[in-house]
Image (cartoon, rainbow, N blue to C red; front, side, top):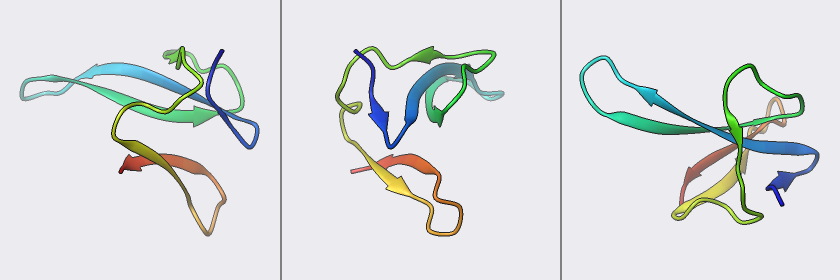
Length: 64
């Protein structure tokens, strides 16, 4: 099962920063992205909650 929010699917991807560590980025998409994997659970990542951009209506994750 994957996490859905109003028709948007949650994806994640590990990215290496120029100055060091790898970080995990989370993003929502209605289509399958070129890179990234579907979030494998129907719950949000620990310590995160969903926010919605008031102007565009796009969902995003923020720290809880």
